[in-house]
Image (tube, rainbow, N blue to C red; front, top):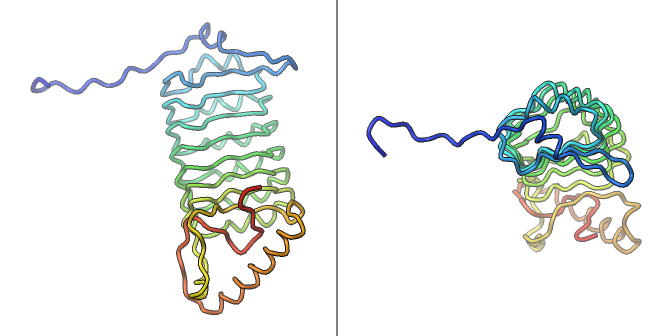
Length: 244
């Protein structure tokens, strides 16, 4: 590189309204989907404000660092896919997307979430895997329709307490988190390849439920030792599901 010259910055892709319109997909059942994935864009194109009458919006697999406030104009979307970007935060206006059913924020750089996320009353699937989260806002407990929650590959050291208040929750993926639990007796061990899932008792067969109760009793007895142990890939003393 010649002296005094600055390294070239990667060119930002520009999406025109015409280009965005060409990315609209219409399913046989009338679902309108705007697919702007794999476009190498660093910002959300302002022109898509004119296409806000969509049912689904896919901005995944880009280089986006910030979601603009005009996202709240997409008042009818049921699916918002933002996975595999560079998001470090979410705008508080995310809570205005009242029709949202699926929100995918996997593989970003989120360290916290706004309390307004709890306003998404119809949300049934929330994927927060592969981020840098240590806690969830208490408002998550207000997502009474939530059934699937992805929390894998974050920085949780304990199961978020708010999950116990989600009565319709069917599955939680907490795989590869530094969950801290009490030391198991020396003759017990957890295989490192087991994954961490939480499921309702009603989803387990009779034999599996019996096994889970036995393991839970063992864990409760082990708590008396009060010796902390760090487990990154194992089952918590909750409902166990290795591969359902």
